[in-house]
Image 1 (tube, rainbow, N blue to C red):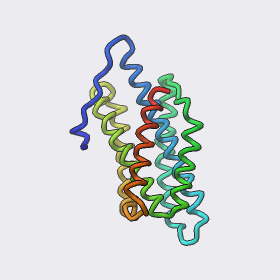
Image 2: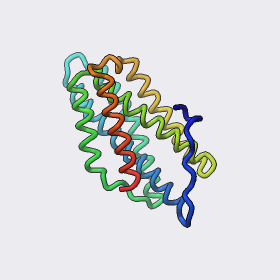
Image 3: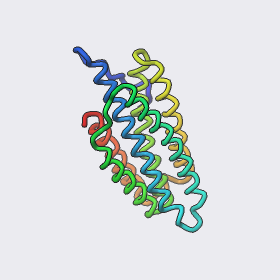
Image 4: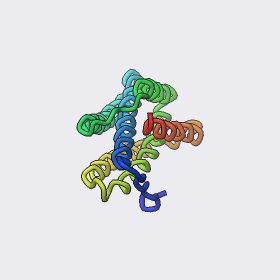
Length: 190
């Protein structure tokens, strides 16, 4: 579904509803970037020690750097707007690192399949938020657009590197995407 096809989430009625919704957006986005950093760290932990995988380890390090920039910005926004991070952060760090390392242990194609699955979900997630915030907070919508472009670049690189060639790709991708969607819903609220 394209961004244009997605419906923006209307603001909830009542006092403070827009502020509460913005807090959800910032909380979940910070959690997602935290997880992305740890996925790439897990993948690098395996790939940097695998003979012949130095190039992939460098790609992963570069992508982690992009995610770290995003995470730093969301950390600033949480602080500026007095929004607490998700209480799930310790679990998300562990789960993300494990996912990254686990897919890298399967092989480079599986690691790329992980990246492609995660970034596909995140791109759609950001697109919906951009539509929702375009009129209410254009500066934040513009930042999210930049971050979404980085996620698309990561997804496209993963596809070029053979994500769809991973063993059991459809199952692997579906499980990872479902996990991401569940984590998004949990992180908005908890």
